[in-house]
Length: 387
Image (cartoon, rainbow, N blue to C red; front, side, top):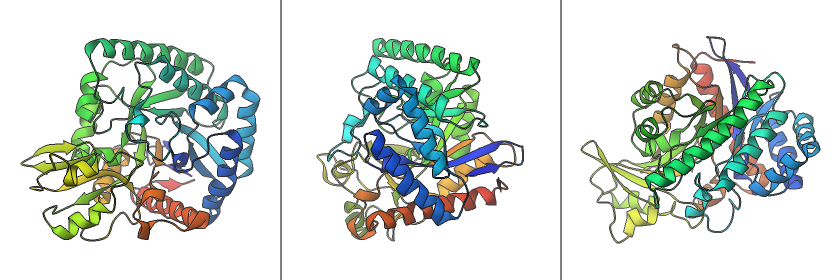
């Protein structure tokens, strides 16, 4: 879906296909037809955006044979879909039984990460609509925090500089693509403070992907966070609209029992506690609940679990949708559009507590459509007009 901000900016709204497990072109084309087309039909819109996830082996195959990219673009058009953004954070195997820390490999010290991102940028340059102002590719925030060193930072920065050269070439031929590093709890770039400290002065065509779940888990106030990025000269290339799970009172046994249902084996669910204006954290939800050094429960908890926007959690838990709405107001308020690519990224539907999981493909289509409708309504409330 496309919207026009009062300042004239065209804002693209999409959902991210990393919720689907396909790892080859035929599987992605089926995603497009069944899920993309199904969600578009459920919303009753003529055009729907998809933020595609292309695993690294498939991206390599497509980049080596652009006729396959044309086949992908044709499949999108036939289903009434378009793509202006790719999610290149997960490298491959994102739906293996256990992902956890593997999602951060290879990191930006590894040339394989550079090659994958270059492949995605080149694919997107050919795939995106001719009338799109630009494309975006989101990627991981350098690396998981361990191991890390000044020497590794030098290598990572060298790879980002090389990437910038490729992006400049794409811009020169009229197909601009920007790459956005996505701060995430536990990573080298965990917060907007880290982004301002480590990414300021980044080469051209690079910026930040602001994931609203990650921002909330860090208990970052949206206005201050965006001011930090602006002061560091870091554009918000892309916004991932997502909600965390919040525990207002983790000392309540009912709340802890309810939260336990969100502890699962596939994905990492970093958890943070706010006490006296400072955060304490554990790298995964089971560690926070009952690990060797559990969080004390002296202040509210927020957990990195991308929960459905329209229905994130039941009492005594709640979702961080108020924080999300506030973030959107700072990004797309009357002062002007500070982002133009908005992507709903709830990849956790199949690992939700059993009583909250969608039933079959139709249930997933219904859930994704409801999230997009929720987001559309917030954009309209901010004064954006559907195109």
